[in-house]
Length: 289
Image (tube, rainbow, N blue to C red; front, side, top):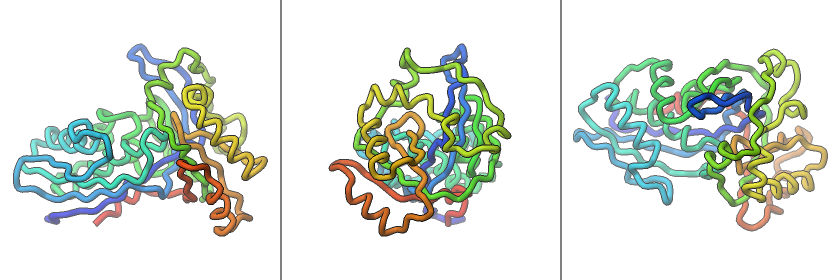
């Protein structure tokens, strides 16, 4: 049995996000296309002969007991009655409160890694069911590939999309997901679409938008500033907010080279973070060693 595993935990962007309803328990029904990207956190898991789950390195400002990676480890340990423990070192690169799913991805990668480190041999579907207890986005990262997503995030169907590159901008401010979903002005009755309808077009078509974007822009004006900044740098481009924000993104025209993108990124306002990313076909956590 391996005593240590290193994993990557990739971010995602929502190519579109429609809110189609709200359930009696308060959860929102949605439709979306989730695209994995190569902006990743890194996680090191070490086997402990004690019964402890420790987190020697984690996200700034997040207490260990509140961290999804620790909660994921305890959940898996309880579910399997595993007698030993693990140390979880998390190096954060993905901005928090940015709509990129970093926390959910970290939790999913811990489940994937501990399933291997502890020789538990749980199936992917078992891990996905466990992941849903941690958050609506966690099953997607366990599913591990580009997907058309429905329900509260648990109904996933793999889709093939062009291998686009994206410019992702974090405008220096985070947004609490609950604040966006609780807003009275949020549109909650978007007419459902079919997966074939989505695949027949392109995600950048205006008919596929992000229903959370107007609300997020009111809560956090930096979202609109970032969208306007992209318009200035790449006129006529299809730009969009990811998830509940605050990150925004745009597909990079194939005619632009790396030097041109670097030149654009050098113009970022102070305190913003921008990155050129590519879409991933599979979650790299499944290839960890």
